[in-house]
Every structure is written in structure tokens, then in C-alpha cells.
Amino acid sequence: MRLLSLFTSSVLSLLSVTSIAAPTSNTSTALQKESHTTYSFPNQFHQCKKTLNYNIFFKGQKIGHYQRHIVWKGDSADIYTNSEVDVLITKSKMDSHTQLHWSDAAQRFVTDKFQRTISGLMAGNVSVTFSDDGHNSTVTEDGKTQKYTNALAPILDGDTIGSQMRLDLIEGKKNFDFIMQNSDETSHYYFAVVGNETINTNFGTLNTIRVNQTRKSDRQLSLWFAPSLDYQLVKATYHRKIVDLEAVLMSKKMDCPPKQLFKK
Image (cartoon, rainbow, N blue to C red):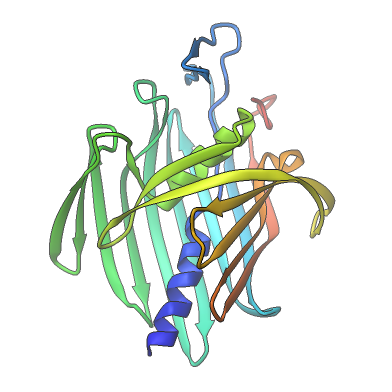
């Protein structure tokens, strides 16, 4: 049972950090602040609705699938995700809903709240609300409530981290770190761009940006983002002990307002 728990948690970790969408940059009024570009959401701007479908593999064998659906409402977004994974003899399903918004004050995406339900192995319900631009969080898991605070950086969920990471890549950053809210703790994750790689994908041969998780000697998480596909994640791998996982983008659907497609 401990092995099954490790396997399932590794799958969920791999799926937590993927990309969604970033705001448009108002280049005519963009300001430089501490070497960061200042972004804003003009009132006339509308984000694309996006649906991304991934297959999940363990040592080359398909074990499940994962879908993310993103709906933008001005400067905020709803992200609906669902996945199903056959872990050895146990089938696990996950459904989650995240609400996030762009914070002009924090100059980044912050999470408003998220809810996650897992059935099968590691079954449970987690509901989290965030306040003070993400510096405070309240986690309710199966009826028990805990509170967390981080004065230095916002606490984010996995979907919001994916959004911010994508924006960091568009901005040309090479190193970034995040505080992620888990069900029973917060964890500090560090990432670094290790270079550009040309890889074969379901959309042909693509030039990608490879990002690795750093400061973790017992595991390796690698992410490949394709600038030509709206800087979306096209591949991810996760290796830890006997765990050997891969997520691959199989299909995508984007519904964008006229003349706004991939605008940045």
C-alpha cells in the first residue's frame, strides 16, 4: 500500500505543474520595476478558452489521461481539471476546480480558491481559500481545517503555478520559485531553464524550452514548453526511485476572440 501511495502521489505531482495562459503585455505603457515587466489586463482584452488533453505513461505504458479546461473572465480564470489513472491494481480519479486572478499589486497570478476531489487510492476532499493576495490560506480536508501564512511570497496551487511559470518563460526568465499549497503543508519549489531542445511531438518536431526542477537530489521533474504552441506544456517527465512517469500533450482546442490568438 505504501508503494501505491507513492506512485499515485507522484502522478498527481507531475500533473500539478502545467501551464495555462498568461496576460497580454500592454507594451505602450509597460514599466520596468526591479527588472520585471509590469503587466495589466486592459478592459477590452479577452483570454482564449483552452482545452488540453494529455496521456500519462509509466515506463512507456499508458496508465491514464488528464484534461485541463480553462475559461477566462476578464482578469480571472476558472480551471477545471480531471484525470483518471490505473495505478497497478487500483484506479484513481481526480477532479479539481481552481479560481485565480491577475494581481496588479503582486504583479503575478494568485489563487483565490481551489477544490479537489480524489476517489480510489488516496481518496479525499480538499477545499482551500486564499486571502491577502495569497499570503494566507485556509485548508479544509475531510472536515479538518488548517491555516497557513507566508509573508515573503504568495501561496499558490498547482494550476496557478503553471500559469505564472508560463508567463515567466514568455518574459524570458531563467530561474523561478514558488510556494505551493498541498493538502497538509506548503512546499517551496525551485525551477531553472536548462536550454532549448528540439523534440518530436504529436504536433510534429518542435523547438521547446526545457525546465527542470532544482534543489531535489532524490527526484527529477522536467518540463518542455513549445513557444510555437502558445508556450503550452507538450511533455513532462518525473523520475523518483522506481517511479518513471511521462505526460504527453495529445490534443488541444483553443477558442480565441478575433485577432487575439496568441497575442502577447
